[in-house]
Image 1 (cartoon, rainbow, N blue to C red):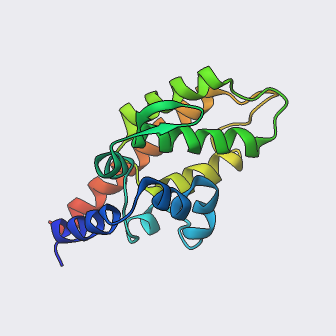
Image 2: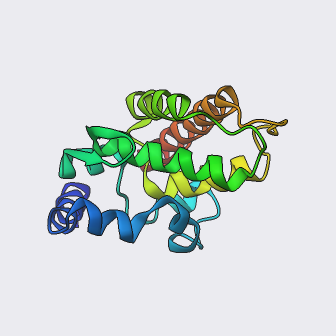
Length: 165
């Protein structure tokens, strides 16, 4: 099966769901269980790949009770950051305004990330791989983690492409 066929099959599966059904299946707090065997970025390349962009393209916009009307890709980023914010259990979490701005930032720059990538990134941020939160959840640390993670993904994709040649 070619990559295009895999993407089309993936889109077909998503398109048979509503946003609510998808979110219930793939909410951020379930990513660690859903992708429990993804331990490295190399493992991520071997899994079913649903990107944040795929989510947005499939589900379009949604009226969220807190966020309001927004694109589902941004909403997924929002829910991911919100989960990180809550799970961190820090005495000064990100504000609602910060959550909204950060979710738009992440979607705009990193909508090519896949759910299994977000699982790894969540784990690694919580483990302190990219630095520690000191008293408050730090949006700068989160943005920096996304950039570093993206740099590694790009390097690995290049390595894989070179091996194919």
